[in-house]
Length: 454
Ligand code: UDP
Image (cartoon, rainbow, N blue to C red; front, side, top):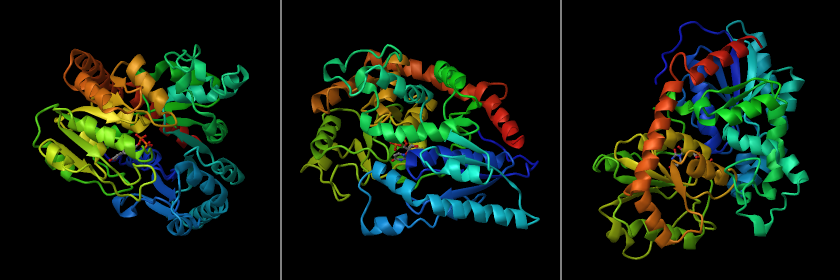
């Protein structure tokens, strides 16, 4: 699905404000490209932490916040993404206000500039809503995760009232009756509730919600969220499929991944990546390494900086490991993931079940082995394995024997074939929903009309 640049200009400028984590940047930048091609002028506002290279987006205008984050983190690297979020929420409000004020002033003073119509913000920023309101600037939230998990977040206070938290250690495998097929252990940990309350508040005070999903995948949850919100919901995903080749990575992609895949048989390779933030212990890292080695299956494995907890961004493989896997293993520090998943040699994806990774895998018809590590990942993995039945989950820790068995099941056994058939059927639905007359296409048209009427 490749969109052709629309000739009629909309005479509107949209401000886009992505949270600076890859899983949030990916859909926001795909959306920015998409709306540019639909005729809007686009300004991206970014923090100094994890910035994108504007040279990769010649059609978009970039503004950097004067937030001091980069300076702070270059002295002392951020310990984890929740700390980064807290720091952003305490240091970015005023720089963001100044930035918006400047952009609005510039637009008002120039005859050759489109007026600013709307802010599309990541709801992780707890200040974006109130700042936008103070300028009477309409705002739409971009939900970068699943609708099925948003529904759970939206019900957290009800679940708390029912006494679900703190989670009862003796009931972790019980079903959550309100949200099949979730189990109690899949529910978001209490340490996340503060962040989630920010997300909910920023979303609820918006005038609309764009989400990276499609109706045929999450119909019930979309309907449930729509019913509970007074503004329209626009499920226009899979957003990355409008421009499959666009470069939205914060880090440099190792293109040897593709050259290496070119040497492999169709559907033979297991692609392994645990996303941009999640970390595993050194012992788990070694189990993953041996689980991959004790198997005949070729693998492409992303070992990114920070994957191993407490490491200084380097890692050591056991002695002789590289020789053992030399013919069938390739390790990179960052892959062009969307391109990798669409490569004919890839037959399975061992993932941490981040929502972008899940959508990217579904969009290419690739069944998944799920190892959820934190946040919404356990819920995504449960949907993948038990609702859509397009993958299986490692639930009993990270042990090499279990890994080897699971890889075999996914890649060569009958169960894996059935998962592949089901995910192929979903891929076809994902392809179709972007076409004229179908769900995401229609929602995109509705979104554009909605923005133009703001
Ligand atoms: N990604 C990538 N190269 C890699 C690993 C990940 O481009 O080597 C991209 C991936 O395609 C996805 C994003 O990083 O778009 C990760 O988002 P996700 O929601 O899956 O997980 P998160 O990183 O937020 O936990």
